[in-house]
Amino acid sequence: MKSTSDDLGKAEVTGVTNAPVVLGIMGLCIGIEAVMQLGDAGFLSFPRFRSLVYEYGGFWPGLLNTWGPNYPFQSSAMF
Image 1 (cartoon, rainbow, N blue to C red):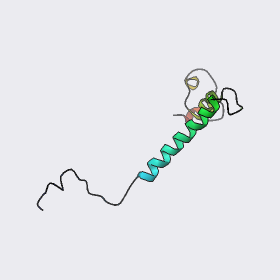
Image 2: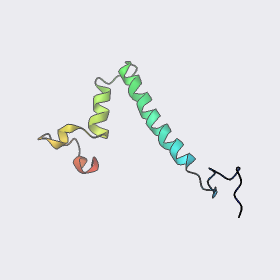
Image 3: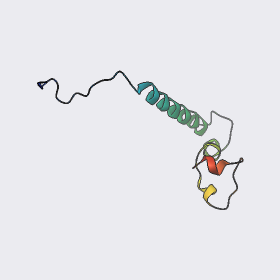
Image 4: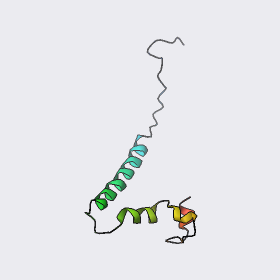
């Protein structure tokens, strides 16, 4: 097969795209951050909202020290 200038730099498209997965992950991350921003701005009635989200839903350094987990198997779920 003879190569032309139109063929250079083009990848073969197989019809498989990851765009919905990537957009879904982006939407989830943006949504979580938007809710935390609302908490920071005082629109949610929880004091320390961002800290609570980090403690219950994300990795926090206390699990590496002597602090106890907030719920069973939290330290395993965060790694």
